[in-house]
Length: 305
Image 1 (cartoon, rainbow, N blue to C red):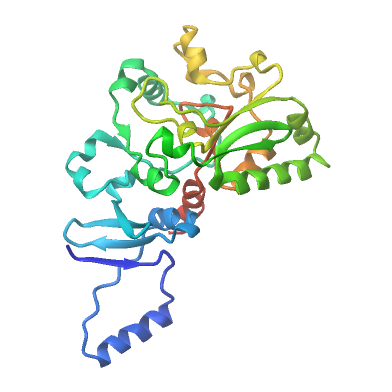
Image 2: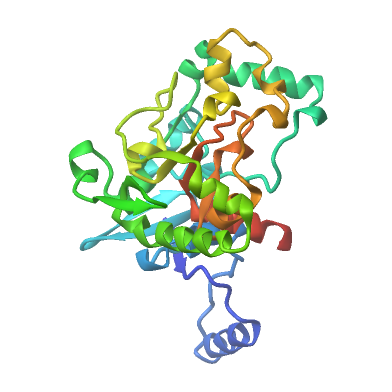
């Protein structure tokens, strides 16, 4: 296997020319340098403490992310954002992407085409969900030591968030604390932020389980997700599947005004610290925040390249 490993940051052009000159003087032919794609840069830059590196496998014609683990390293092939080990590449179609482009805006049902509506109906169909490709968890399990319930629970911490207790992974204690501090600061001058705090009923974090009707693990099982519910949340619709289970086959067309949505300033604050909000998914979950710093970075990197 022809594999070269590089840091995520691009080599500055003058430095690259100097390195190339040194190779020329020494009569060594350097391997052709390939710019690291923004999606892979986003993954590596999102976890600076993990010392991830990226390389290109010229035989398999795919990028590889190298994760140091104890005294060894674990390799994950990009595989269209699925992050698979080499032994699973032949069954790549059995898995769905872990890395995707997180939307900047909330999808508005008023803008949906008939094709969009049909796509959402298929995505929400119970049988289709049960038979859909799973999300491979190996990369996250390596980062968060979450391959089993016993291993993840060694890393669970109970913290206070806006006056409520929530159980989360120790690696996101500080990001969540920064979210809390920003919300409290915002609430000093913003009545919507203050109302969000004052009407917060409960926060739910770690729970070892799969996503409903699928074989993929919920991000609650990695202790990376937090559900926030306000007092009187039942007066508006919070979660697509609860509405579908009531018999509403056109749950995707429920107007935004009829859904409970956290204040936009709250969503912005969570995103500023690496959390995505489930209300921007087509299969929307408006109480749900999830620590995915690589998706936030990819959203920022994508228009640049």
